[in-house]
Length: 319
Image (tube, rainbow, N blue to C red; front, side, top):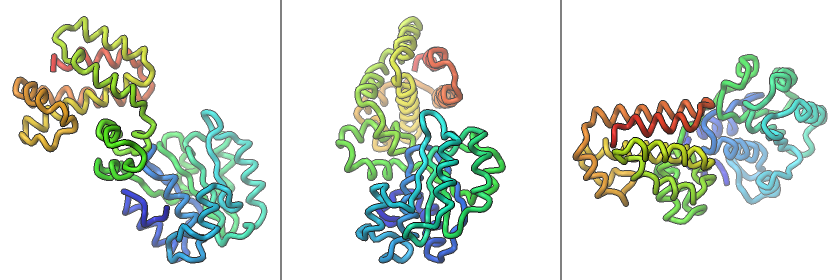
């Protein structure tokens, strides 16, 4: 794959490609944005484009250099990934020893640190000198889903490029050769703009979570509480269920305001959406929708899953 093949984030890709064409790349970059939207893919493409003998600001994808970088075996493409939960200082020390030597054959040596926000404080401090004074003909790309884990001293030494979630159409395009049409239909709306997230989803969990929707809409508070307990015990299903519930509320709002069945995420539930939407008020649906979003953010910030699910299911007012 080359820059021309990347789906989504065209502004970010264009900025990078122009710098490659001019041969004026920064010593250090920070590619930031949610997981699974192509940041690391673009970083590898940047390494390929910088060193491809046949391309003009892009990779040809056919030469030995491009092919070895795609396979991760090029000696001048150095990649660091978290070991377990963190990137350890030993990994940075080993990288620094490698950088003490000249590139083996490439015009540009490229270092990709994926999951850079998982560097420990000790690791980040050890990496600072390399970021401040990288060797000649070397560029370092930090790939991070969150900036909170990176100290200001690291952030200030990188040229930051932001990647955004993909549109639903772009997600579906990326997934076209990875999932079946049926899987894409169910997973793409839950991906939140991240094809990687859609691919990692457990199909059985998605099916179970969708099947739990009638219980979530039951007028019985006891039935909803029981559902919250069951979902909390099923690893992965709780978060997916909240995505599905949010999509359901979103469909109710969209149909009430537009009456356009083609805009629904859950088109296979169109008849039920129409029935329920006619019985609700937009103001209440909006309140419930934003409540679900806040609860999801709370879970991401290490909140209690069962309490979050109970809050969601008891607070939606029987919708």
